[in-house]
Image (cartoon, rainbow, N blue to C red):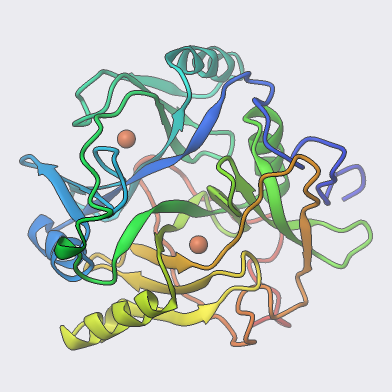
Length: 341
Ligand SMILES: [Fe+2]
Ligand SMILES: [Fe+2]
């Protein structure tokens, strides 16, 4: 499309992290909340099999964290009539950042809602926003600090999930979402996929706040939808151990894709589905992106190594849909070109 900027450049916004036009310092992805229809079954999957640490629970929610995490939670399981994602949340550097984000989002006509301290256990006042792509985003600053279990090796269980790393979302217009996240919120771009058209069209973008490959990946597709939340594990053996644990417990159907290695991000990964078919990724082996002159890495949509470096064709699978908060629309580009599938 003429006039649309497809490729991120080192000279412009999107090349590296900034405060963006909103003037807020977003630190990193902090947590995600999944809706589950059977809280006991979900707890068994995430705690008993995967070894998430349970910080606490109430009548409707279980609050979980990874082994190295000090934050009260990085994954919330909330009982609901239908599965899906309720929100994902970014931590900001100071309370003032919440006010700045509120002013900007309100001025830009986005729906916002304040969450009072304690409404989500362990969390201070927070701001919920439906972002420009329609995704349910939360910003918070204060969150209770819990003693981390990094060196309580005696308590390690499951594949040793250490921390939350990123979310991966599908949106119908990646270019528009990319512009919002880089220009307005100051995300940096580490890698991207574009078409080989002239001019090229942006297909996917890996965007970061912390200094690794991403906090959020934007992918072309029917949406807005959350594809998965990614959790970091220490090494490739942890990914294999997760598969063995799932199979040993009779949950082979939970292993959806992988183990494999992504071309984008270089990460070794496996996708797992919980009992409600919510998807998580176990993820390791990406790299540091800290320098302001980082040049985003381009992948052609026609390069099969971008999704799976070893060349395997990814399966076509349904994605998580949050029907209550976000209304999907068809993508601007084809969902997946025939030469990739
Ligand atoms: Fe939250
Ligand atoms: Fe991922």
